[in-house]
Image (cartoon, rainbow, N blue to C red; front, side, top):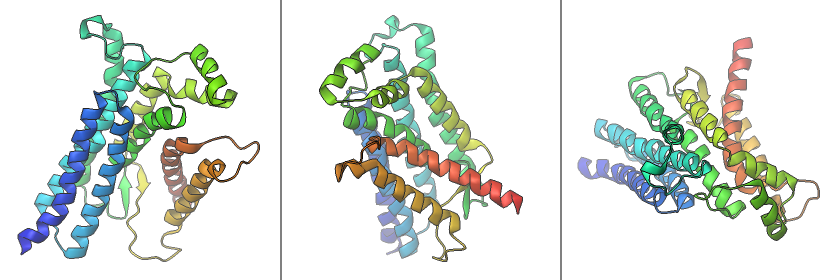
Length: 285
C-alpha cells in the first residue's frame, strides 16, 4: 500500500518530466510557443506532486530526487534551449547549417545554456539546504523558466510573430498597418527581439538563481494576514496586474496600453522586486 501511495505523487513528477521532454521536441520543430506552454503545464504537475505527497503522507527520498531531476529538464534544460533558439534567431541564423554560423554568433547563443547550468547548481543547493522552508535562497528555477517561456508566447499570441524568423523595424512598421500596432507596440517588439535583451535576461536570471538573496516563498503555514503580509501583497499586486493586462478584452480603456501576455515576464519581475523590498524592510527593522 505504501508503494502505491508513493507512486501517486511520483506519477505527477514524471508527468512534469514528460512535459519537459515534449517541450524540447517542440523547440526544434518551429513551435517555441508550444515549448513554452509545456513549462506551464509542467509547473502545474510540479505544484501538485508536492501537495499530494503532503496530503497522503507519501514523502520519500526517491520522490525528492526524482522531483529535482524532472525540474532540471522542464525548468532548466527546456528554457535554456528556448533561449538558445531565440538568441540564434535574433542573429539571423536559425535553421542554418552549423558550418554557416559564425563562431561568435554560436557562442553568444550558448549563453542561453547558462540557465540549465545555474539551474542545476540551484537545485543541488536547494536539496542540501535545510533553511529554505519559509523562503527560498535565490529565485526558484520555475520562476526563471516562466520568465523565458513568456517571451515566445508574447511573440506568437500577442504579436503574431514567428519566433524563428529575424525581425526588423521595417517589418514591424509594415505589419502595424495590418494589426493596428502603435509606436509602443513596435518599441516593445524591438526590445524583446533584441539579442542583447535575451543575453542579459538569461545572465541575470542565472545569477539570481544562485545568489544568496532571500526570495518569497508561497508555502502558507496559516492564513494569518500579519504572518503572510508579503505573500498577500504580491498576490494582490499580481491580480491587479493581470486585470490591467487583459482589461481591453472586456472593455476598452483609452490611454491604457495593451499588456496582455507581457504580463508573464512582468509578474516574475514583480515577484523579484517584492522579495527585494521585503528584504530591505526587514533589514531596517
